[in-house]
Length: 281
Ligand SMILES: NC(=O)c1ccc[n+]([C@@H]2O[C@H](COP(=O)([O-])OP(=O)(O)OC[C@H]3O[C@@H](n4cnc5c(N)ncnc54)[C@H](O)[C@@H]3O)[C@@H](O)[C@H]2O)c1
Image (cartoon, rainbow, N blue to C red):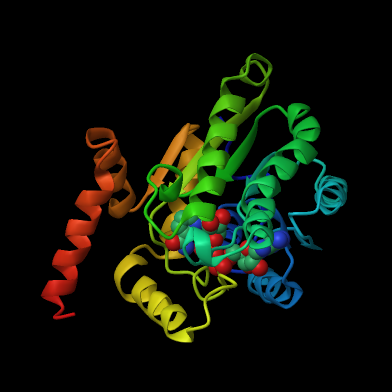
């Protein structure tokens, strides 16, 4: 069991959204934080917000897709926080487009952040975590690591991969006998900047699709506030939950996938069509 009070956590993607909320909630619960992001200005703003919470805070400019960056982050963070015992691999990105609308380089850009970033973070911090009395790794997947709607080929590939990697790692004998626990998190829609910051497939020239997609995410899909997502994740750490689902949307889609493993997308399409009809679209 990992208690939050008196712990120290490394969080990637902490300049915005769920990562920022995690940093604030953890610090409020008495946990020191090493916050990392490639967005230095965003990190500085979160560090300023954290200032009043009376915990030790360090900021680290890190590109999670670069293993050398994460190694340097792990070294600096554990030097600054020798008792660091929680690692949250959270940084992630999204992309607009069908499979034939983005190119291989764009697919690899997304995988390098969403999947390899999680693997690099886990590898870099594990030796340190194994030396702690109680330690925890949190890997952020998505409900799109459980179901796979159209328009999400790269994102789903990355998030299914995070889930597969994390579950298999948790089941490995050596980790099961170490002080390190592992939670994989599957949020439904959370009100963050992820869609606003997404890249657009190289073949998409019409900006209207991007605008519509951002609007739909904000009004229809982003149901949970980041603070609530962060609190749910923290409860998962405290209870050593192997899997955390965030939001009723995620809980519903998880059940739907179990009952209709081959046909859940048809049910989702019917629901979306009903909703569009009700809104007169
Ligand atoms: N918002 C949602 O609805 C939702 C749903 C399911 C899963 N998630 C996952 O939650 C995680 C957090 O996303 P969010 O919604 O808070 O998005 P966000 O865009 O608000 O925050 C993501 C942060 O990651 C950082 N980041 C991106 N690429 C990076 C890189 N290469 N190196 C370092 N930092 C990088 C960004 O600068 C940003 O600060 C992601 O893994 C995302 O896939 C989000």
